[in-house]
Length: 583
Image (cartoon, rainbow, N blue to C red; front, side, top):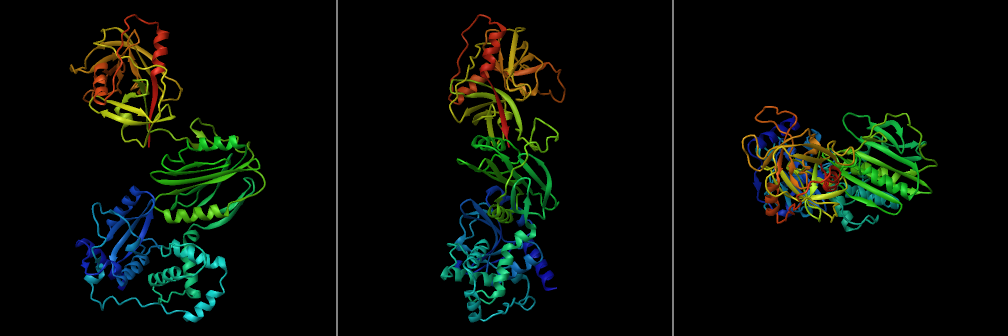
């Protein structure tokens, strides 16, 4: 009854606007840390989720690239009760713990707040419940006297002593060197852990307390059924989260272990193939094209090994592989976001236990698997959210393209190889200007037509009609039917042309090879579906204007003589580039 009553009062306190500030110093303030994430946006989203159902949610930098979500600040005794009840009712993760202000950096949640150095917040229960209704949680009696605990401690091996320090560090109480020496820092962390877990504070862990600490440390591994798996065909033995993944199939160079538990969408791949350094480097390049390796993350390639990290919207992946004696072996772990502490423990256990056995996967295994140009060994190749055409506007590789392909992208690429940055975008005109991150040397650049085009003259559009599947631009021919929009809009030209979506952003050329404008994406007119051969282009003057605003100069076309279609195609394909937007 006490627990249910306690939780309901916490909810009532939240509805009434949170807890009340108590007059205490920062040294007396403690926190309940409930999660930590290496991605700021993920941490903000999780803090918002917790704030919707819990009071006193705050977020702070923890140092490096880590961001913590914490409840508080509270008096130590209030924090103990919040921790005990919230963990007992599964409102916060079971590995939540007491944290201290001295370990917290800048506050990121709520945005604009700064509660450090401003006292503590009294636990909601203390405001809503008489002290008699919620008795203090007594310290658990020790199973050994301090002297007995020290004697049993002296019997520990060096590794067991280091393991205790590792467990204290993982729980957030120890931040010094792992040396197995129980000095003042280790003793203080033991005291903090005892306080956090309701034990008598002595600074010396008893036999039972050491077991409790190690059980807490290993709980993330136990929860996913970590077990040693020996894959003789792949020639690899290692610990895997066998409670949440199971063997699926072989498709060299991978042994696929799929999700077996609907509650945790984890996956593992073992990497096993014969090869050389060139094979290893090829695998490094290929894996970065896969959906399972998101764009955001560290990449490192050494002489005989590589690692890849990828942080996506819903999952994080880690891959490592190395070459030894003509055999490439490694693994990939794919883990859902929002469970970073457990993911890191699982990853550490997998890395520490990875063992090479004789042999590699037979390259012919899984040869009967279905083939698809968008699959590599059964894995989806990463594809851009949107691909359009563009064209080079100067010798440095500046690109003119459509504004839609440059909006909200994690990465913009040219020809799937070169990264580019957005210089400027005009949504009204539908034009964007990109600058490559490295200097490029285009085969040809746009020479912009001066004045209006000649009505009913033949025009050509170069574009990646099939969004890069063919690997080169195609030419589509048509007619210039008007030098304004359907309602007389200036800055537009109307074309009679059978274009495809991928052609948008491509240059529109006249008979002399001059650029009349840029093909715009197909649109409807006030809900009316226009005929398929009706297309529009932003004209050369509109492009010049936005280039001038960006501090760029446009080269004018001074040629009058008509060129052969083959020459126009050569000029057009030399300046046209595939532009892709990646999430």
